[in-house]
Image: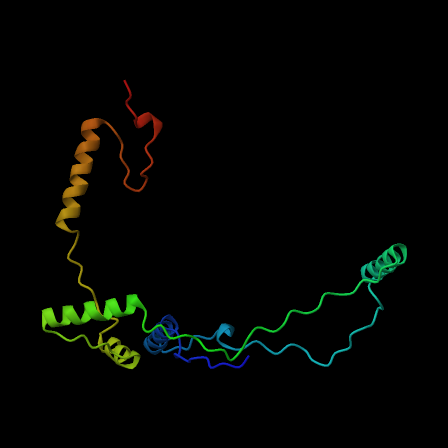
Amino acid sequence: MDYPVIDRGMDRDALDTLGVIDRAEKTLKKTIATDIWNAPPPPPRDYFVPDFGQDEDIRTTLNNGSAAEFSTGYTFVGAKPPPPPPMDYTVPDFGPDRDITDSQFNLAAQEQKMKHKIVLKTREQLKARRDEYPVDYTIPDYGIDQDISTTLSNAKTASDTLGVNWDPMNLIQAQEDLRLH
């Protein structure tokens, strides 16, 4: 069948990955060289294929079929191919899907309530906006967060008080740590 296929462009994740690679290459002033970006070489063509004759399993099956036809007096005939599926038929138009109309109604109601019209950006606009954000900048080190410091202190106090050696990197409680009385 011949039908149109909509080209929606390159996948968003692929575009993002290529953007990251491009920025990394510019930052490092190096080109990432790998064979995965290149198409594989085409398979060999016009090569010699030896003819070993009819396959043994095919020969056995044909002989068994002939013997069965002879013993039953009936000639086997293959099944007729099914008719092709119908084409060029009318598809009824039931109008827009109920979920779509509900979504459009709800969106319009919220836009009116918020007095704000939602305008979706194109891929090009999103890509241009993403490229505006700075990258490769220094993140200041303000030390450990106060909440984390308090939590670690409380965990140490609890371990000391209960006599349990609690290791936050190993959250499986050891059998000797269980105090069952």
